[in-house]
Length: 136
Length: 387
Image (cartoon, rainbow over the protein chains, first blue to last red):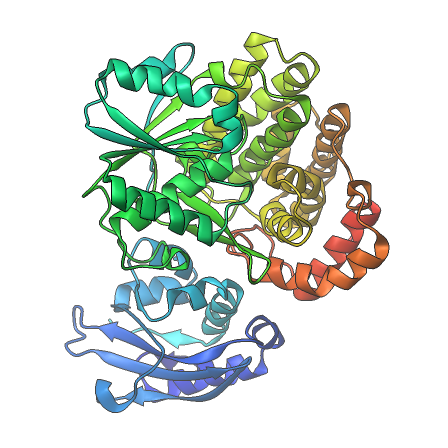
């Protein structure tokens, strides 16, 4: 059954996929750093939605929706409107290419990201495994 | 959404005279001692003098330039305050010139921070001219910058869409006297750019034709340029091929021959073109299972057809080996004089470097760490990839 994107269930489902993925575990085995994935307002989405993920050595230690952006201070923030996130999740937009063209805006230690491109790719692969229902 | 980035390209005989009408006051020429020694810097200076432009030379760039070297060059630029920077040399020099230019414009950042995700706001103080003196790197037509982090024995594949030359001067004058080994190394580099640019995950309509043309030119003219350095037609065609391949792969990215080649080159200090050229047939075989049709298109161009597309990819790999053999390039890591013991001890570092290289993710097929290890082992022994 499809899980609604922007919901708490969706990020929990992604967390489960990540923790079950051998490919992600291997690709991100040296990764240390947490993220905000920020969905910016667009169309019927009137307020930003912030997903938080704590990624640590190939494991997702926690994942949740954040209501106050100041609640945490993650190492990385990637933000984009829903339409761009949808293209990433549906594997129509390569996330690295999305960042290079600044369709996805990245804040944080960029060098660290550049050294972990495979981890980013496997993370997206896991996103595609979550049966997702996108808001209209 | 994607971009196609290109400098103004001035090519062919007498292209260097583009400098005669350059508008500017001061030029910093970034080069190396060898280029100065064979009089190439003087040729550039002649044209700058004609244009009434002052110049200063920074010729301390080494092969596989380090972060320290480009920082020192940026300091020289800050002192001299040029409005043009000219990179005159092979890939190392042109990459160093790009990095020096970026750091001159942006003294607030470290070289390792040059990345494609953040705008740099270049061209406030100077613009860049790239003049290649080898036929392979294509750096004159790309926005990539490869530097060496000597503390980590690792190459840093950096870049930013703004960090491309404003003018590329592709004059065959500079390559007529290239020694055979350098001709071979750089020629294989151009071929690797073109084949990987045509088959990478980011391949696109704007680059495909460029990559195919470059492949055709390299197969036709590299053996001639290698066997007779005075063959002017072959020299010019190879010089064009390198820049065309640069333009192609620079806008579509490279792949596994680059990530494995970067890794081997950084650990054993082997020239870039030789390492990427060595890995090319192995990585074609590895990616054949997912990019068979693209390889078949290349093979069709080269008249190497087989019934099955995947089989055609293996024919292409063999054709690349045959070309490499004809210009006395090594076909295995063992041929490079690296002992088994030394190789085995370095294998974890080789795998780790390749696994985290930025060119890995644009490959049509992305290896696991175990597959990388196998790729290195097969390339050491010269085995056809069968996994």
